[in-house]
Structures are given as C-alpha cells and as structure tokens.
Length: 558
Image (cartoon, rainbow, N blue to C red; front, side):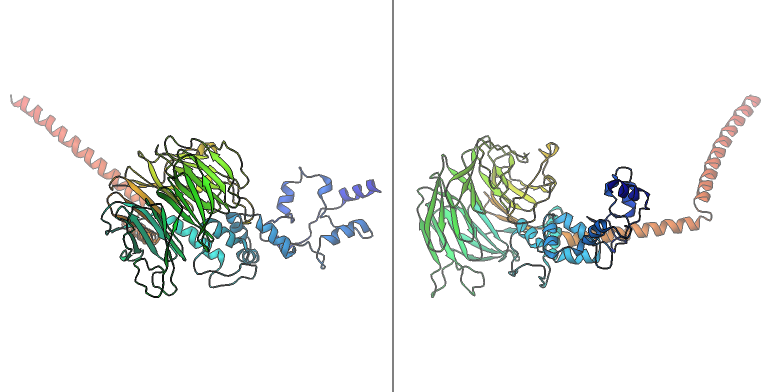
C-alpha cells in the first residue's frame, strides 16, 4: 500500500493550493511556487505534502484537514492562535519586528499593536515620562509604543549633528558633580563651594541655590521624588519633592509649612558616588564600603565591604556594580553577596563606571585614559571577565562616564569629552521579553574602535558629565557648567538637505538650458571645442610661417 501511494504521488501533477498570502511574501509555513521550484532538486519526495489528493484516501484527507481552513485553503501565518502569534513575535528584536510590519497591512497592524515595543523602549531608555498605562495587544493611547520607540531611535542620531553651547556661571570654585534630570528638565550641580545649584535645562538660568553644606559636594543623584547629595563630611543631604512646587525641590529652604530636607549618617569617609532606584539609595565612600539605604524608612539595609576606596557605582535590576581601586565588582542587592569580580580592570584606579538599562553591559573608565566594555550576565559568577571592547580616546584620566543608548559619553582630565556609539557592537538582537537575558555578540574586528565624536577646546580637568535625550552637561575645574544642546540638530540637518537638493535641482536646470542653447546638445559642444582647437592650431602655425617668411625675406635682402 505504501509503494502504491508513493508511485501515485510521483505520477500526480504537483499543484499548489492557493493562499491569500501568495501575492505578498513567503511566510513561515507557506511555501510559494517560486521558492518550491527553486528548491525542488534539493527537496525529498516526502516533502510534497501540498499535492492535490485523490478522493477516497482517508489518511491524506485527514492530514490536509488539520492544516487547511474550512474552505479548503491553507491557513496563513495570521490564522494562528493569538497566544502563539504573540509568542512568535516575542522572539524577534526591534529590527526584525519592523521588517515583519512591512510585509502587509495586516502584519503591520499586528506588529504595531504588539506589546513588545514597550519592552524595547524600556530596555533602552527606561519608562518615558507621562506614560503610565499597561501595554497589551489592544493598547491605544495618544501615541503607540512603536511610535515612541521610532521617534526616540531617530532622536538618538542627533548627537552626530550640529549643536549649540550654553555656559552657566554661578559657582565660585570647581564643579565636581553634575546631574541631568531629563523628566523635570532640571540640572543639579555642586562642587568645592559647598552649595547645590539648580538650573533650568531649557533656559539655562539658575533656579535655586541651597545653603552652604560646609563640605565639598562630590556626588549628586535625583529622580522625580528625591534629591540626594554627598560630600567630604560623610553624610547624605536629602530633599523630598514637594507636590505642586514649580521645580519639585525646595533646596533653598523657603517652605515654612514643609520640612523636606533630612540627613543620613553612617559613612566614615567622604561620599564619592550616589545612585537611586525606586526603593533604595546607594552611596559609596572612601571608607571602602557601599551602603544600601531604604528610601521609605531612611535606614541602612546592607553594607558592601571593599578592599580599596570606592570611586563609582551603578545599580540595575537587583544588582549594584562598583569600582574600588583598580577592580570592578557586581553585588547582589538583596543578599549582599559578591557575584562578579573584574580584577585589574585598569592600569591605576578605576575612577568611573556606568551600565546599560538592563545591566548586561558594564563600562569602566580609569586613570590610564581607557574605557572598557564588559558583558555581565544575570547569572554570571565568574571572576575572570575580559573586556569585550576597548577605547582609548583620552590622554588623561577618565573621571566620569554616562550612558544613554546607544551613546557612551566620557569626561577626562585632558579637557575633552568623548562620544562613543556602541550600536555597531550590538550585532545580535536583544531578547524581547524583559524577563529574558539579552545576549550580545562581539566580533574581534570591533574590539577596538575609535570614538565617534570628540568635544574639546576647554580647560583641563573635566570632573563630571551626564547625558540626556538631546543634551550633554559637563562641569570641571574652571567652575563653569557647559551644556551641549543637540535638540535642533535634526531640524538643521533637514534644512541643510533641503537646500542641497534645491541647489542640485538648479544646477541640473542650468545644465539643461546650456545644452539646449548649444543647438545639438553635447555633440555640438564637442564640435565647437574641436573647432576652437583647430583655430588655435591654425593661428599658431600661421604665426610660425610668417616668422619664417620674414627670416627668409631678411636673408634675401642681405
């Protein structure tokens, strides 16, 4: 019976059943006629399951009944159950999902409404301000998550465009710490003059000045609810946000009905670095410890002991990374256990550190002027982690690092700011589920790459830098805060491109007009050029012959 059916299968004509997706693109599970014809020599005979069956064969009829719709046609990709379809799209990255949305209007609608776009956005840039709604297949708001993602991805290119510089004067001594709060459009700065200054990001004006804290301010961290500053007197000065306040925080102390400021004591040395998350405060000090504080109860929860002075830290998703001496550490926040140690990450002290939103990429800057990128897994417990990429953009120590996808910005004692684009290094797409670990692959040729842009021409010793969606803020030894504003870069680039296209169009029009005036086009121009050359040659030979005649006449007269 099997031989009889195989012979019948070979003798029967191979006809494909019509599919509603044949006119658009071959999808998974649907074989187009062209692709089948191209791959026919490589396909086995068993793979021809799309052959029109003969009547009376119950086995083949049951098989096609499982894979076909009630009208006898093959099911398409969109006929899959919604749960399975969502799981398939969940395995794609942002670029692949964008390609799927270009296949057909139906897939464009499905891909645009997919809940993965929120994960893409939050993995790269965090939760956007003013958007606090659950994402799902039926999510509709003023703007889709896909539109938010595409717009932010487009805006990230502005750092390669033109910029304007705002110079903020107010500090009387060197600025040691700057912090950009993009959601509130505020900038906080502090330094050797022991005061905290608050600036309006758009206007570049000083909004408020705190009372002198009596020590050098070396670190600042803030979000929409809390502002924390630390200095050489080993305490944390905190301000809670006041509801209805035009600038969130009353650092000047003018509010009579509220007492938003308080202090946290515990460190035994100068506080060098600070960070915040939704429930905790992280502080690092030269007493060789990192303290984890509870924001609600203002109590110290954990003390992470190091072997050298702590220079920088960055918490992400239940872990906190820190640098002490020349080593880098990754700690588990809940248990306080050490998960990863990177020994001798730099030649000299590792002064600065920053991480991606997911925490899988760790960037360190050191006294040797180098910037290293490490890939840190969520379950990584190894001690010998090698850098995945290395840059040496500075001739002095790298004092500060900041990351805003896909840009790493650094400030150095050589007075320069470096911008590095890591998009080329992220070759394998990120996993789409926030619960899954994102995987990144690097090639050996991209291990060392020059920075994309250098901002220089300023004084030496730039101590602190921060980056936002379209701005870079930096402070240094001069006591001046500089803001590089790239918000108009894309608009300027569009205007320049429009002017360039107008000039090109005018040039083509002039060329066409010149060709028409020539009579016969390019051929007439060539003939005229040849005629001019012959005329010049004729005049030259005439002058030569006249000279010869004159010489001969002179000889005859003699």
